[in-house]
Image 1 (tube, rainbow, N blue to C red):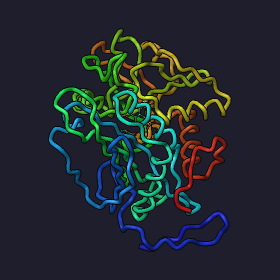
Image 2 (tube, rainbow, N blue to C red):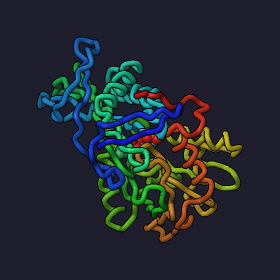
Image 3 (tube, rainbow, N blue to C red):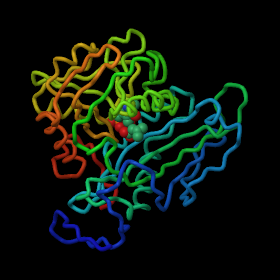
Image 4 (tube, protein in one colour):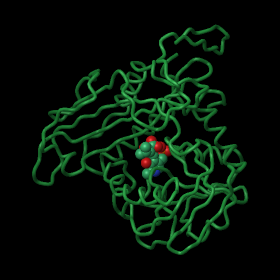
Length: 355
Ligand code: PLP
Ligand code: COI
């Protein structure tokens, strides 16, 4: 397939090596691409970057990732921009969060430079799989770190594999920027107040599978968790943070059991740039009543406006409306604009990985 992309300097770049896919019909799922990149940690140090076309990992049956959950992942995206360049968003933040996760579950920290080099490499190697700008789809980048060393006692491994694969994706929640209903699930906790919720480890997602299924079976886009200790405050959704808007204020939960979302951190900054007040604090469930708009946010979700949140156990329903609110829309457009290089990147959040 041949496509012409206008560059900023008005010369035309001929991209004749894109896969012939119906990019706009993609869902958020796995599709095989051409390469992944890998790096092994052995004898106390990280090795060379290896390029691989195998989708499989050969590992010891006693690997710590299989038994004791020594596993962490990240999620970020590459954007094919209207100026013909490919950008990634705040990858240094993903590297830092992975380092924090490593400290949390005793894995060796991967240096930011190595993380960034591997992101650049895997995106460049798979550039034919980066969806078109017009489609709204993106290339999802999934870094994964697993303990591969064998242990039977509960101890950290002495060997690790870090790899990154990519896959083209469409929207995580139905319709993309479209309001969906969510539900508070009270009979499950995703993570404990002093547990692993602040780390991006697979165990948190295993803990969310049943609650997520219940939410879907009831017809909701996703489940919301309350804080595990008091069951009083909004924590987050299974794969996204929460924000509410009222009186020109952006309010988002402060909690020791939620993932520090890079999207949320960016939206807080953008809200501040727009002259809004930003509050990161406990949000009691009843306060939901007072928000003019509400949304879920994350790399996969981007901003996913919330039409209503039902608390099925108490019978309460907090309604925000079937259409995305004006502030959510403004924030969405600004964030997307920065990611696609069409809005000024004042904070230096994006990096061009393909010129
Ligand atoms: N919360 C959870 C549980 C997530 O899985 C994600 C996705 O990464 C987020 C929040 C959003 O984080 P980010 O904006 O860094 O993607
Ligand atoms: C993300 O937003 O990157 C996520 O990790 C969400 C989910 C696919 C786990």
